[in-house]
Length: 120
Image 1 (cartoon, helix red, strand yellow):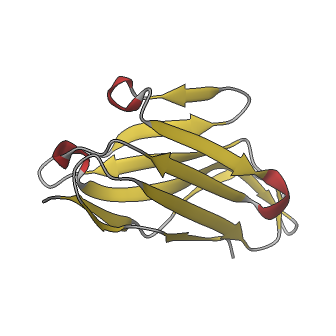
Image 2 (tube, rainbow, N blue to C red):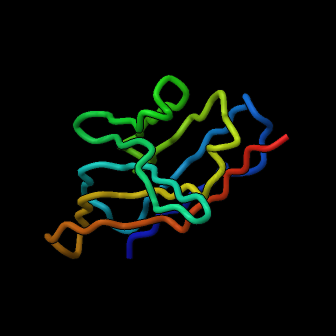
C-alpha cells in the first residue's frame, strides 16, 4: 500500500523559511510527478508546485518557493523562503500516476498534510 509521509511543517515568523519533505513508499515502481498543494481554512485546495517532466509553480510562490525531487528515494521537497502570513495553510503532498509492483494501473495518492503557520 502506497503511503506518503510529510514532515517539516510548523510555526515560523514572516520572512522566515521552512523546508517540507514528503517520502513515498509501498512498492513503487514509477511516478509521473510529485507535487505540493495547500488548503487554508475556508479555501479550496490549490496547487503550489509540481515536479514532473517539467516544473510548475503557482504565481504567488514564484521566486520564493523551490520544489525538488529525489527520484531514487521517491521523495519531494519544498523549500519555502520569504514566508508570508497568507502562506498559512495545511500543505499536502501529492503523488501522480504511481505504478506499484502489484499492479500495472496508475493511481494518484495524497499525504495526510502538514500544518504551516506564518505568524509573528
